[in-house]
Amino acid sequence: MNTQNKNIIAIDIAKSTLQVQTENSSFVIGNDKGGFKRLDKQLSKLSKPHVVCEATGGYERPLVRHLFEQEVSVSVVNPSTVRAFAKGEGIKAKTDPIDAKMLLKYGQTRELKPSSRPDPAREELAALMDRRSQLSGSLTREKNRLDKDPAFTRKLIEKSVRFLEKQIKEVDKRIEGILASNDSLTKLVDRMTEVKGVGKTTALTILAYLPDLDSLSRGQMVSLSGLAPFNRESGKTRSRAFIQGGRAKVRKCLYMAAQSAAQHNDVIKTYVTRLMDSGQPYKSALVAAMRKILICLRSLLINPKFRLA
Image 1 (cartoon, rainbow, N blue to C red):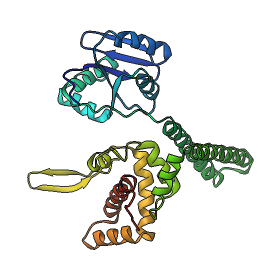
Image 2: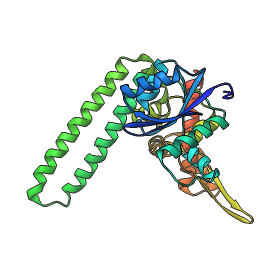
Image 3: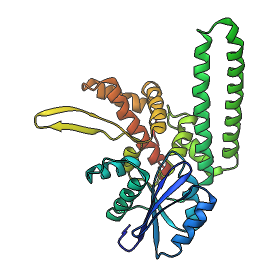
Image 4: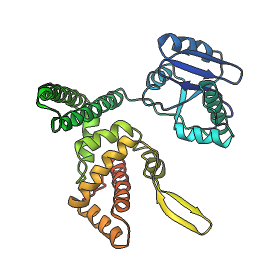
């Protein structure tokens, strides 16, 4: 998208505040309905406003949803990309006003891709998947305590374990409710789980945290999931490429899927074996399998005739 004919508005998002930066003004509003109304008044004065903000682990969702309701174009960008841009500009300090100014400059000098309108069902699914992950982590920690805590606290821990298990069942029930009322999501999950090694949890995680999977290019998809290898070379030095960044929740599920597929999926098993026979360490071969699985899942969603063992 050409941003030269757009009025770029940068918004640095915090839990309770929004630092708004335009070409000629800077102000702080609440990250709430009252703040959104004030923002609307400012945006109504501009021709072709385009908001750019960072993904902030969920704090951006109400604002983005509101902007789409107001039919305002918005781009949600990767925070690490903007931070790298700021460092390139020689800016080491980090405050909300500084971040907003850097975000504005980034938006004015880059070709911004408008973000897709959030799907309410997938937003709810992402929130429930977040909660399930939190509960599962707490449950694991409590069960680990059972092995080492004294008898007089064990009953309290067992009570906590039962509560957490009940909560997880409630979350699972709500997730099933979303699928039961959304045929398109159900079909996508069924389609993705055709791949041996990809379970329902992995499919739901990818749909929740990579909602644009079927519209992203292969390179964008791999980079966004944190599976793009980065070379480390300088002069005659040649270090092993490594992966970093991206969406850790997607990467974690894909790692588990790749481990399963490397044993039970003939295509992935052959692929991993070939890489290891050529000298690749097991983990490197597994990361390559993660990329292959993700690319195959994308192909499954785009092409109805695509098949994978």
